[in-house]
Length: 117
Image 1: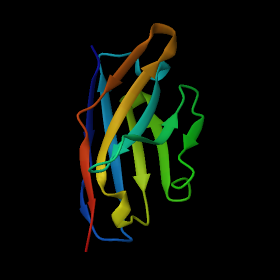
Image 2 (image 1 turned 180 degrees about the vertical axis):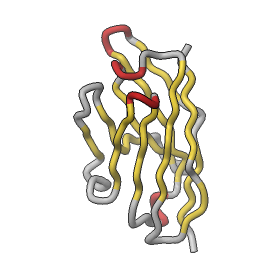
Image 3 (image 1 turned 120 degrees about the horizontal axis):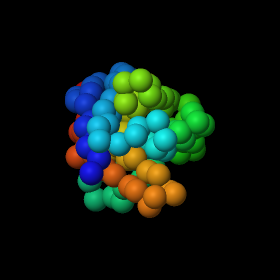
Image 4 (image 1 turned 90 degrees about the vertical axis):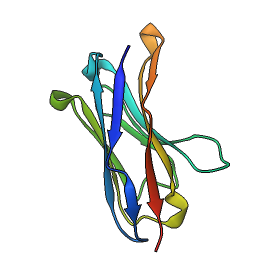
């Protein structure tokens, strides 16, 4: 069973930046597609950004100009750099690891991001 641990969340003012990290263990990290999702109060969980095992990236259209996903396979870690944060970015951010071939899908516990003045 994989373990995904998110960190880096917190309270930030509008216009500020945060970098989230997700450290993975008990999986062969480099062969997994990784993603960040978020869920705001009263809303469904939504995809923020994803990165394949080969480094290809995909973003929610409304976020691609402000958010950047990256991975460091040597550290078993995926990152989400978030810039120009807005109050509507307030949500719990979740890390996800997926390997379609083995029907493997894992979630972290989430990290709270609050954008407020």
